[in-house]
Length: 392
Ligand code: NDP
Ligand code: MG
Image 1: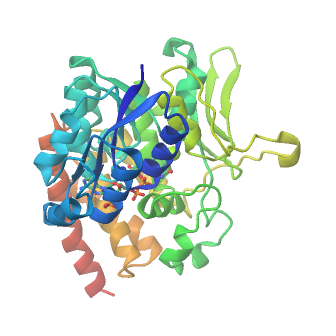
Image 2: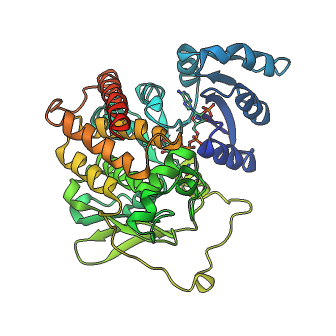
């Protein structure tokens, strides 16, 4: 019997890696609904290629284009929020949550409320509303499978062992394209340089977050919620080869790590396999001799202040991570369009975190509350950005 997989963010980097794997294992899987953001033509292509049962575009204005591009295919489709929620409500054994940014919160949460098994790539869901997501997953009997490579690695290394046996959970960072750059050179970097990731192939936003190490900060927050581990027991190490992804330090001094070449199809296949291992066509074997050495270094929070700022938000708790994420999305977009320099990202995010510090002491109760704080923090950040630019 084949499993039905619905893909939220089907046209993105994770979405395409997922459809690639599903096509390789067409005997085991069938594609349920596919959801995209704005690109109607790309979504129609994915829907046709995968023979999806339904296609939904978040952007209501693109509905006519989607319908035209799918005409004759027999694939039902729709646009706007209600169509996205209809896609989530369709029958599925696994929902891959791979929309980028806070836009992923509502559809991902809707899948949890239906008690689905959710393969979670959209880390923003946990960063913005982690308490609510984990509580509701338990309440509605949903299962969250971490798809982010570091968290999938931790889940594999933990292998269901109790956290009482664990001293520290460690995730690795590649260090990004600026790992060896001086602060002066990083300060002058443009978006194309920041997006040139040395080991992983990913979407634009997460590439910039990887260059600033904000991605690692978001992942610490993600790990805190996924595994229920206190911030003090979470750590980061820079590992430029991106072969070791996550390490569990046990109380007795033993360490269990997961290794794989940097290819998101590995964690994706682990999630889709639901405990079984799937082969990956054209997947390269990990050749340790060819690699020769694996190196590790401490993360430098002087040159990469976003990691420090994210850790502080995690330690503060309440809605601080929600604010952090919103300000970061505003700052990264501004950096990509050339409105601020690279360190402008950290500056704006830190200002937003300082401004909102103590204002929302409790973590958002639910998705609506998280999105309200997200909107408030975005509006404040956009205004602060204007002031920063005016000040030169
Ligand atoms: P991409 O930018 O490549 O893709 C994003 C996807 O989300 C696209 O399909 C996009 O459609 C869709 N989308 C955007 N806005 C909306 C919206 N409002 N409603 C519905 N769909 C929308 O991102 P990635 O695939 O790189 O990342 C996706 C998520 O996975 C992120 O949260 C990221 O942090 C996480 N992740 C990614 C990794 C990677 O290797 N890429 C690794 C680990 C985690 P459209 O293009 O039409 O807008
Ligand atoms: Mg990751």
